Image 1 (tube, rainbow, N blue to C red):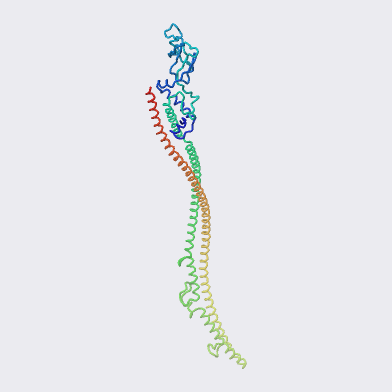
Image 2 (cartoon, one colour):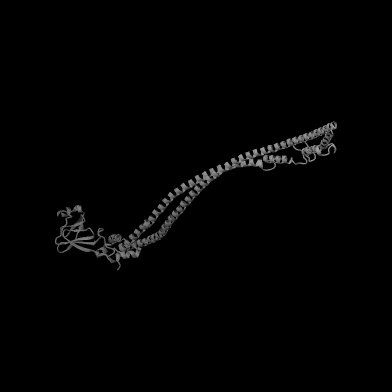
Length: 468
């Protein structure tokens, strides 16, 4: 027959706590002894002879006997406080050889009158000291124990083993370790979350700084656009100031060769038309002055050359009077020539005046255009400075953008780390759930098995008691 340990394992499954099984087998045996009917206890009781007194610890006492030398008389139990009374021969409760008595004191039975020569006899079922429990892994039967009641001892131990298994499921060390690891991961996750918050705050600060720099850059660009718009107003289109000045220069230059159209400052067309221009008049008078000299004007015989020839001829002929007359003609012709040349010079002076006036007008418009261009160049310096400032702000904004990107990347890295830690924690949670599922299933089985075995045990004990 299998040992008690093996029988328990058959009922509860794996169980290795032999020390606990020894205790439960011992407790169960003692409990069943107390539940046995007297007839059953007497059937398996043992007798121990003694003189004077006997140890009763570890014994379920059924009765005590004392022999008078011939007959074994049953001893009556009296309270230990009456030990003097039962030794008083005059007292009605006096203990005699044929009417003996016993008391229990200090885990010892003392018989009166004191038996001799081992005439005392203790009838009992041995019980089992918890300090020296039965070895459940080594025995399959209990000495001085009814065979039909031994299965109840196995049921008792199995019920206790199931209860221990159930309590063990309430404190699964693997689940506790997983919970510790989950807490560790979550604590680390909180620390990483703080790092994420730091990086996010830094990102927000960098983005705010970037927005500030962009706003400053926009301001500089807006100011530059204002300057550019003003410069464009000077240059772009027929109505711009520079264009007006340049067009006026073009108009003034055109007047040097215009054949019609009134100049703005110098009168009507006659001054500039080809037939009446000052230079044409100069040529007319210079040509006529030349004609006076050697151009048969006013007649072939009376130009300066002819008159000089006549003067020479008359002088040769010594016609002083006629020569003088010819000299007077020469002088008149010279005067006429000088007059025409003076007139031509006047036309040249007039022409020069008009040309100088036109040049002055052109130069004035040129000066105006140059001044406006210089002003526009100044504007260009201003807007270039503003654009350079805008570029500086944008470069700074780019630096903040890089910072924000770096902070964001760091935050993302920490976020990934958080996800990884949450994933690890979820893995432990899955492990806990799996273990809980197994433990719950085992606990449910243990619970059902414990109820069934408890019912079988209670039924067996009830039958055992009823058999008394």
